[in-house]
Length: 236
Image 1 (tube, rainbow, N blue to C red):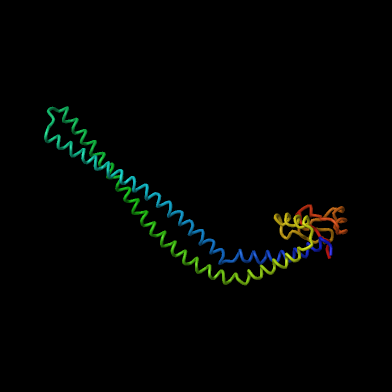
Image 2 (image 1 turned 90 degrees about the vertical axis):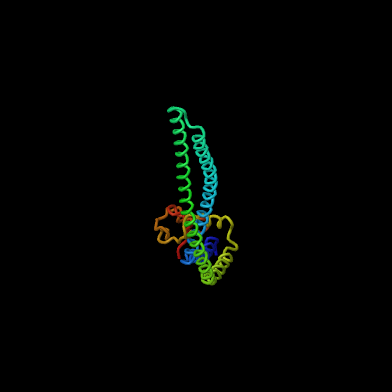
């Protein structure tokens, strides 16, 4: 058996192993597992971001509460000053009224911001509760699906391992350079080899030049299809 023929025999087992591996990866249960896993990770990221926002809001709420207290104290002090030392003229009265209005506007602004922060906090609390519930449900579903997938895939994993073992056995004795060429072609197109039939590549049905046909007929050199890049082997 020539090296090219040995490589062809190897490809048959290699393709069987790949087919079983693809079945494992494309399993509907596996896809659901991956989708559920991604959902759980997304929920965790969102929950962590919310916790950061809650911390920022808490700091801002404390700062506003302190500022509100100071503004109330200023307004109270102004009222006390008005009672103990009433303004003597219209100008002083207007000045004191303006100062009082400024304190009231500041108080209203702080109170409005506090209400806004409280509203945001309530919304985030509800959302956090929903996220925890959804995540807990998703984790439970993930665990159940994982058990089902493990049971389903156990037999296929054994078949894949055996197919991979058969392929490795077929690879024994094939020159490293030829295996490297095979693996290089396989990265771009599968299957990486094709038979020559009626002067054409059976992979893409493209006619090959006469020089390539002579080399393939001799079976001594590696020849790749000029169109699809597959390694060509003489047809039966």
